[in-house]
Each structure stands twice: as C-alpha cells, then as structure tokens.
Image (cartoon, rainbow, N blue to C red; front, side, top):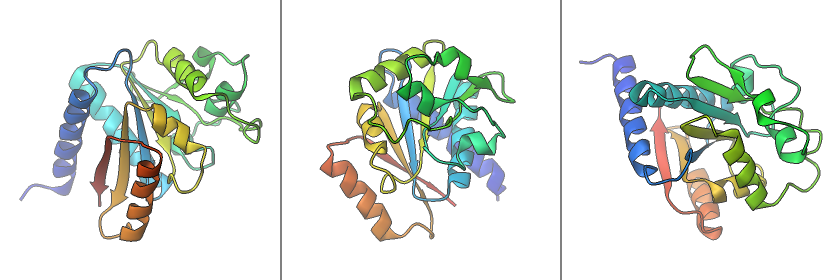
Length: 202
C-alpha cells in the first residue's frame, strides 16, 4: 500500500498536468481561480501543492495572488506582512505590480499578497480593467493562480471567476456539506461561469 503522502503527490502532479492541458490554448499566462468550501488554511495548502507541481512539471514561474480580501489567506500562511498588495493594485493607479510581488521559498513561485484593502469599500474597477491588470502582473509568469474564499461569502469574487480561464472549486471529502456545494454551483450557473472543475481533498 502506498503512503498517503505519495498518493497525494501523485494526485497533484496529475492535476497539474490536466490543468496545463485545459488552458493550453490560452494566450498569455492562464488565470486560474481556486475557490474553496473549506478553510483558508486548507485552501492555502492546496494552492502551494498545485504551484509546486506546476513549476516542477513544466519548469516555469508561478504567481500566486491572495484574492481572499480578508485575513488568513496565502499571505498569512507564508508570513507575508506587506502593507500593500492585490487589493491596493486593483484600486490604485499608483501601485506597480513589480513592487508588490514577493518571492517564496521556491525560486519559481511568487506571491502577490492581499494588501491593506483600504479602498475595497469603494466600487472595484471594471471587469476589463481587472483582467488587464492581472495580465500586466503576470507578464513574466507562466500561470497565475488566484486564491479566494467561498464564492458565497463575498460578491466581489464573481468578477474574478468571470474573467478566469479556469475555476477550481475545492471541497473536502466527508466535510463539505452537499447543500453548500450545490449553492456554490448554482451561483456559477446563475452568472454563466462555465468550466468549473471540482477538486476534492481529505
């Protein structure tokens, strides 16, 4: 019997290969949104595993974006305390993406932290502008993976799912309630967000 760790590694390597195939025709760095029904702590681990195997399989640079709009995301997991980040980049014309992206312990994986969010009570910029800003931030990367909390928790998540090339909905086996999963899927359907992939973890 194979150890759980080895089985998990094989699963994420397979997922990385499959995602690469799914977005192979995308021009520029594909934008992948990871939305979780579980805790942000577990979501962050999923993000790191996926980023590791993508860069390991394809020898490429990955940009992780903390798009949770709250504390406890990948920024917190990696101990990044930058006062400025993704939310500031979306709301301010003065923020340059190069100054907000920080390295991780892996030379091919970088993070744009969540930021202060001081301007997030205001209306976000238009969808096309958000897409353009993400494209600009990703110029030197092969993939962009945006972390979000449950799509039911914040309506601001919708626009990022709409412009994503691929959406991964993370659920926890025997813990995620079927009703929650169905509610998330209905939100996607109601907003014509297609191509959502379900990713299960223990």
